[in-house]
Image (cartoon, one colour):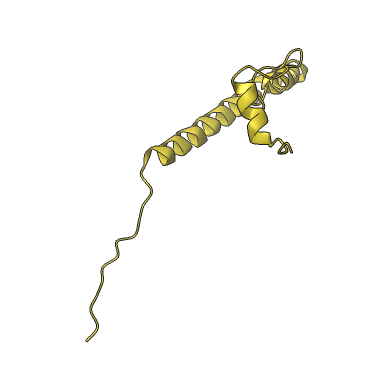
Length: 93
């Protein structure tokens, strides 16, 4: 009897390039396609009046700096070894 496939199996097969791919798929499952998000920001940039362009640019800059800080924090967390508590046996008399 065949075991049911898991999402992890699908991800590994997609990452190896073995599974069927949909047209326009950017990468393996689990890797987000950011092109719709970029398209939304581009449409917003075009729709905003000229007087607010500078504020919108500052908003985008702050958003990207926040995203970069989150990525840096996560990478630092991955690089550090897991802290294990120091345990000392204390004899009881």
